[in-house]
Image 1 (cartoon, rainbow, N blue to C red):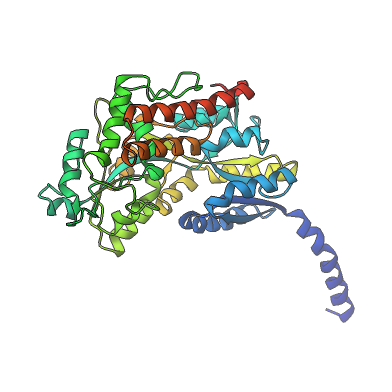
Image 2 (cartoon, rainbow, N blue to C red):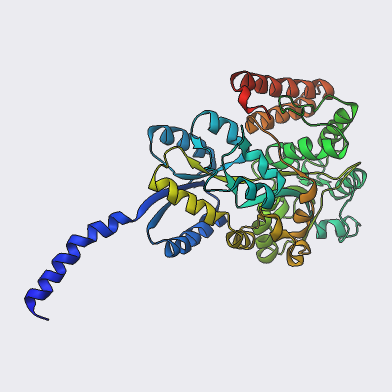
Length: 427
């Protein structure tokens, strides 16, 4: 090769390089920071980019507490994510704020979603349009410490199966010092964790009490004696039986459980990875069981969903759809279950006995047929209303019925205002 030929070749390469670089469509994917998810998505993006060399995915994560605000300040300005992961309970706010666009039915089959995904995913559908699809779904189950059960004279291999047994076992495993300070909680009571879901979608339904009107406009927690009865049982865990305290590890109920300072905890399948780590590295001797039931079985279902923002247009929209399909494929769901511990959103994947009979994952999966996702307008309002009602009963000695009535009134006022403005979103 002559010197002249080499120079010409280099010049051609330099001239062509920008054209090649511009051929790759760049999209941004945002999610809140959760270590196991962040690490897995980094690996998944490498795989996706290898399969789609014409697409570059920029992955960004943000602290949970600032995530919504970050989206709210960037998307309206035409910046930020093209594909974003959001909690399904945020849909009404995100849709009415104009942050999301409906998934194009000509490119993403709505029929496939409704046939192949669990029914709870249909809560991502508003006014006939889907605004996202999940990789994984969650349910609640009971975690129990076998060593603490044994120390209390209970069978370490038999978790409670009904409400009466739950109270009995929680009281037996609770330990307080001479001053009454809680040393070991029979139950890691924490409303701001999963307990507001436990009351709302599990305890109410287990006692055959309605939770919401058919059109989704009102919550009905206090509409029947069975509803008040479930509420009384819930607050009595702390108020009467004293198996937990509101101030006991308030930031994270899993912390006392993994430290051996709580005998039982109701938690989500998203906790599987952390639970396995505690069992392996900290010697935690724990089990997982379906939730103790009363008259009917029920558990809460939730999920984080991948949506496409209004900013994704043209070739960015096409690339975003490809990436969304990749994230919600069966292959990705299998890896997600293994690495994160969350349950596959596609029904076909939980028919595997290796999943349903797994001692840790199995109890979460087994409850999917009776798992219910709440139609939220504002998940935060629900959580705060129930927390305030619990505090009114436990800390201020207020009447339990009056406290629940106040919570219902607060939540329904928010729902009424929302539906007055957005009647098209009535279910």
